[in-house]
Amino acid sequence: METKAIATRPHCLVLSFPGQGHINPMIQFSKLLVHEGVKITLATTCFYSKTLQNVPPYISLESISDGFHNGGLGEAGTFKAYLDRFCQVGPPTLVDLIEKLAKLGNPTDCIIYDSVAPWALDVAKRFGIVGASYFTQNTAVNSIYYHVQLGKIKVPLIESEISLPSIPKLQLCDMPSFFNNCEDDEDLAVLGLATGQFSNVNKADWVLCNSFYELDKEVADWTMKIWPKFRTIGPNIPSVFLDKRIKDDEDYGAAAFKSEEECMEWLHNKPNGSVVYASFGSLVPLDEEQMREIAYGLRDSNHYFLWVVRTSEEIKLPKDFAKKSEKGLVVTWCSQLKVLAHESVACFVTHCGWNSTLETLSLGVPTIAVPQWSDQITNAKYMVDVWKVGIRVPIDEKKIVKSEALRDCIKEMMECEKGKGMKKNAMEWKSLALKAVSDEGGSSYKNMIEFVNSLFTCSQLEVIT
Ligand code: UDP
Image (cartoon, rainbow, N blue to C red; front, side, top):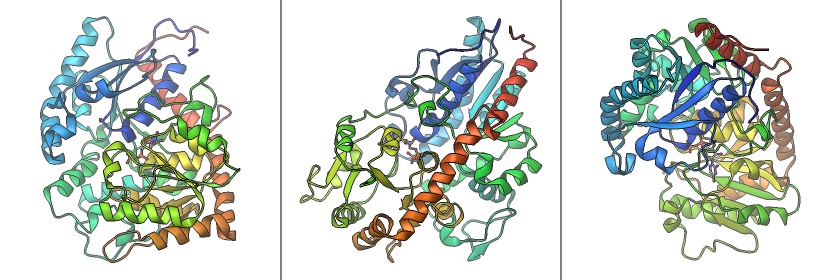
């Protein structure tokens, strides 16, 4: 990658939680910083760092410990056990890493830490280093969890509707999943992780969020009043799909799964705007009944479909459902951005993870929302009612999306005027996302440059022009 000619570069240590939805945007933001002359060391947990493929050579990869070197979360068994241990061993091993880098003549000027690891800020402060919290979720979702942290929203929620500043009224069914169902230790652990992001955020030197100002101006303005150094710096997606500043950057370069390239060939042979793409991200497991309903819903829509079913999920596919048929193809992983950018793709059946949401908005693809848990529920609400790019598939009394409901939503999107309207709206968001990252005064671009300039100023380094 071409970087600016600079005598000495400030050095950022970027600390990501081990998960595709975390490392993807953080590595992408890292690439932008490298492009502007910043040196980056990317750190994640020991086990996770070994699974990463194709991290770009100009980013050095290091690791800290989560206490589970042979299997990460899988080895821990439960989320609670995992997080408890990570919070114990993460901070001291982050200290070790900073000391090691300093001994190697590579002192750290700033830690850009995943907001779900707020203890990294305490470590940064101990060393007198700048601490920038990086949020991988929607600004409205940030506000909701912040209000829980403040004690202004109680979980489980008793009210059927809540009103928060700069956010449309939200019903219980629009709130992150833990708000009506937070019974076991696992839910409580994840809720603790979500609210813990705000435990010390007021002490962070920067609060960076992978979103763009135009997507949610009201909440962004409100947030900036609370944390003056809050900045939107996204969408952080590979460059060729949006800003085109980094040559050949068509992949995050941090996949823990291997893409099945066959699907691109398959897409090339389909008419424009004819394929339904379906994926539920890198984490969420579907139960067997839900898997069956989705399989039959896709099949019965009678449209072409490309469906990502991770290897660990394949066993749940119905026995009579072919992975390759006249209309459909099931793959274990794909390059989602290449798929969304493909002209044969018409819409995205999505679990509404925040990265998938930003990616689909950035590529102008309307959605059929099938959120599963956590913030996905609120993202779906925004897709449907605020950004108006999607249809939410109704759920039954067991919270299952039935095949008929999915089939009908696909038909509505693919065959009715409503679908055309949503495509038009999605294309408008695409254009706004592009403007936000443009180096001609885009909101996210300006914020990113402001952050970079502060790194040069604080480390008193000089740029050679
Ligand atoms: N993804 C991908 N290929 C797939 C499925 C997902 O590259 O087949 C990527 C997707 O582009 C996104 C990330 O995995 O960047 C998933 O993140 P998201 O926040 O949408 O969901 P999560 O996996 O965290 O639930």
